[in-house]
Length: 103
Image (cartoon, rainbow, N blue to C red):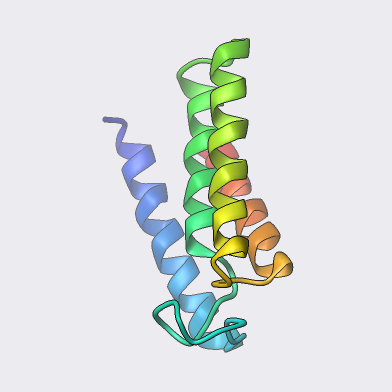
């Protein structure tokens, strides 16, 4: 596995945790673990991984469809379960996508 991927994955986790602690944006419900929801860690990691895969592994149409489907499904489930607001999910996706692009 690429060392840069691992480094940026850890950076993504640290950034996500730090932002949740600093911003203190609550989740819409208390049914989903920690009290803070911004940014969505699931959306952030799905977008990070998706962007990394598209830019470094394979950018052909089947991979693009798979990545878009996976990221969209992850974001949808976070909303459906009530664990995050739309803002938390989209902003997590944007942060993850930017980090995945940088790698």
